[in-house]
Image (cartoon, rainbow, N blue to C red):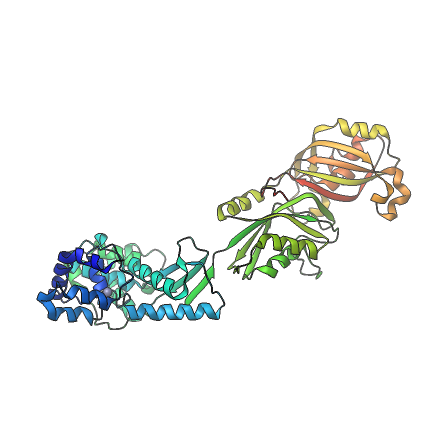
Length: 495
Ligand SMILES: [Zn+2]
């Protein structure tokens, strides 16, 4: 920003300087500009330079220039002071290099200033006869100044939607006490809005202070007294964090002894851990959350295009790795034989939230079951199966899940069935002797259908079932695979 443009605001600045001196306000040059509603923040000049520039036309009050130059600002409590800002900058630079977060492309600032600044800002705006809504806020100016100084020190840009957050939580102990006087001056405003919060301190925030100030009449406003504070805000801690990132994909599971999520008791691995291994190899993060569109039993494989899942990575630190997603999915697929992933991709927050909602709704599925009859399989059995379309079945809650589900009758639809003979090498060895009784059943079913129970009838609790649909037989299930989860997410990627 060109310093000479400061001179455009000559008359406004002159009158505010005069009135701030008359009213014993002690404002810094940045607060004077804020109060003049000068939108440019003049991030490129120091306060000393600005005061020097102004002194040439404020010469009538030359002695007062020194008052602005050396003042401890009563309004911003020197938050907008160059030295104060530069200290924070140094601290951030130090922390970032210590954490190996540099080089950084961009960042966003989350700034929490103490409520006393709101009190003082309104107080002085009122004293100077200004409408505070027509002035720039301390926070706005602070943010611009710090962002521009950081750009110079760490060579990263401030971006409101950056994934990297620098959170500054300022406190001012004395200032907090000062705010508490408002509660005494205007208890009715305080208690009326107090809600369930029990202590005065927990109530002191920018909004409540501003609301109380807005509601104070002029006689009450006169009761407000400011302490002679000469300390700036303190910054006990700077928090650095990355916005969560979301990765969607589909997994296939080729094992009949692997569960989807970790099982504390058996110490076995899980689908989830297999997938995490690839993430953790390339991305540092505090935690990963896993969400999938349903789950299969431990002994059921997930084949076909796989089951949609979503990962939420908390506080993730992605370095400058190129082709990251490809590397992650290659790592998972090369390291594990029993779990493979596909269509791995970054998804945005909205998409992720929609998936979580949608994943709670059970989806229609296609299964393949290796079934065994107590008699040889006949061609007419296959004809019967093929003729079945949109069959309504009633399933009583299966015995195997009765301990965690309430007993009820559920109606489900079997959209279609298909049967075919299979070769001996497709079935486990212990069943080779009964190869004539064994066949592959394909089922396309409504969400929530219990497949195992439909095949073996669950002691007649599922009606009709495979045993009643085929003549004179009992049936059992040897193995089950999910072939398709009817949920088109995330988009299939072309290899
Ligand atoms: Zn100031």
